[in-house]
Length: 179
Image (cartoon, rainbow, N blue to C red; front, side):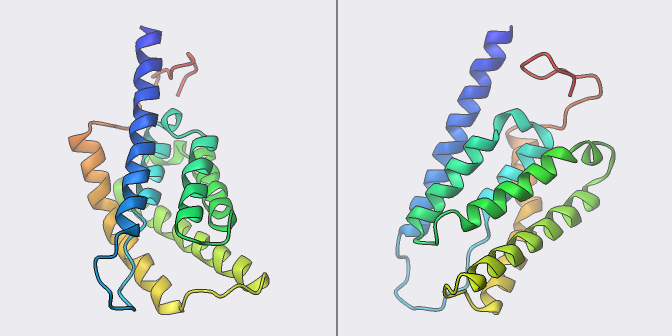
């Protein structure tokens, strides 16, 4: 039984990595040659946050770091800045995930939105301090709006189509620890 759960966990992690590379591949394809398009939502951030709240064993610290470091490399961003911001944010969510178990969706949505704002602000601050060109504020605002709008859609897909739900009270994880 435990081996089956462990194999399922590894399978979910592999699928998550493949999904991340699918997003990277999609972002690298030039659909339009017109500069100044609106940014896409950060779907990977939504997926990672949803899994951290519902099943944190699927997204360990090292896997989030690898995924976002690959994003930094393929998107030609300064290496590690956005990765560090995401790792800090996700570990704060992981430490406080019990608060999401008892609260309703609006609390979760607002919290994830505020956390994404903090990550964007920290990223902009680090980039400005290192004298690297930062994206314009309106681009970040659009990315924030699109990500906040995309979160409930991604949550619906993961919860009702992929059937990844919040753990019940008294449920145990793969290692036998109470969730």
